[in-house]
Length: 244
Length: 325
Image (cartoon, rainbow over all chains, first blue to last red; front, side):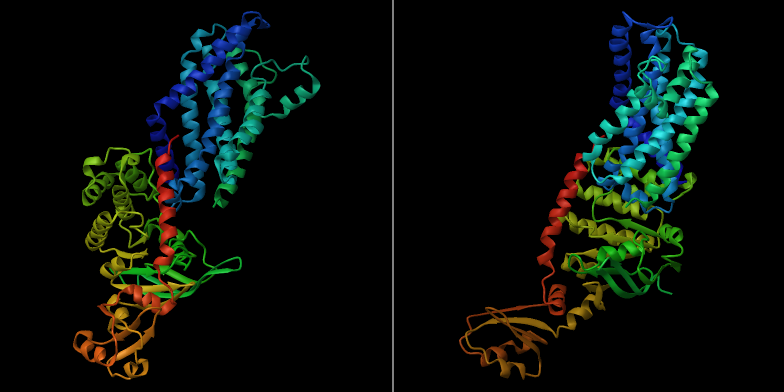
């Protein structure tokens, strides 16, 4: 009951703000065509053009930014007392939390779906791998909305937003191997950090599904990110229940 | 059994005793006003009755459900209009009600009709599909009232429902509150700073100060307890003792510049009183109000605290308007 109500609300809001949908589409496209084509002009990874090579990474980037920031918006909801009316309803905190998680995941996956519609622009991408890629991206999104909600429930104001952006979101992105191949050529410290980042397994999984190049089998990647999601959901449940 | 019942309801925040043992019995259909200055414990009391604040000790029940042990049933039976606006401004008026209906598990078969009825009751049908951020303060309050009553609660809590509204809108908001409470047979518990409004709307009033109920009765009885009318006489040397001994005078108080006499039927006895006071400069006679009751009981004017709270509301309203995403 609470889950579907909150989910419904997030969905309404998502549709209402069409400019946000457009923005969420334009930014990855700029990465792919302005950055990817530029670097791709003089660089490819194996036989894959650089622009195509970072397509899975940019999908993951959309999921990282979209999910974490969606979760962090709970600060704004609280500041404006919008959540107050929801929190006195006869539904549990946990169902509100899961409603938010599903709402965020739905938003993000719809953004990703738009990016998938343009996958024909990337010749190396195998369209049959899209369902697999969607699956792992969905689990990743669930994990990261939970991260955003957890951080949001701890923070009093949006002033911490920049800090989260600098110390959580960007490191998660840069250390996921979204923009470069993860192999023995990486400096050891960097390779170590990348392996420690759960999002690296998302990038690897999507890359395997769409480009056929991966370090680990798909099920391993999916398992790692599922465990990560389970841990984050548990932490999120606890923090959200305690939130004032 | 009373629809709202509390026994020794208490809340302490650290060392601060916000609510110190409140006993209430409020009957079905009653409009009950909780009056008191800022920090008296009004909002905390309502918070405990709505199960958002956990009581430190004591008991409370709404419609027979215990606030500590059966919070979900209690929540189903209460509607709340908060002091600060809590509408979802990215949603339209109708969508706000739809969200509420879903959260309270109102079956989809009756949802649509119920929402239409409520919109009509608060005269918002024409604006139902506009985003609530385009609503005026009075419209927002009305929609919040409709939302609070949508799930047909046994009790509706209104925390300062007219704070920050202009006088005309305030009067209309009270009209809606009365109309809706009567139609739905809802018990209403409200807090307000506006004494005249409480006097006009409430069946009974509890005056709360420093976490305790210090008086509880109908507005008429509370006012009668002051001992009749108030006569203020400005004179240089009033014979205090002689006036006090008059049979119809209930109390005499010397203020900075005037003598304040409480007496029964002032219109009959005023001439006699004035005849024994030499050199009268000016006289004023008035019916006492709830504010006089409050001053007598606490020694303070409730309005001294009201100003800063109004500021808080304006600030909240400004935040409300900034909403975007």
